[in-house]
Length: 141
Image (cartoon, rainbow, N blue to C red):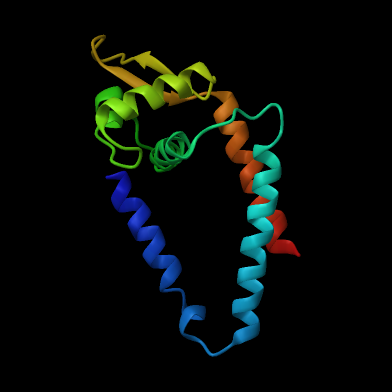
């Protein structure tokens, strides 16, 4: 489940060996890189070509992207069951907004035409590539 994925990532980050080391400079370097990333990511999100999303829409898009990155496809029903963005009705509204912004599309399953699959658009993939570039740049300084 996607929420389990986020919990695992959070725990792995927290349990990183540097967390327990006495090496203050290494920790400071990681913290500095994190804040550089946040600043760069905010600059990307402020671009006119990037849709303005609220926090729940952002969380939903990130959860969908994590599933896609892991090679999973999610149906609309499975997406609505995600707890990252609220109740199913809220998620359905947020999903509609992501569709309206051109970040996701909903396609018919080739196996069952009644099943709708949520897929990323080029716009969403470009957005995550920009964020990945921000992370790369933040790590380099």
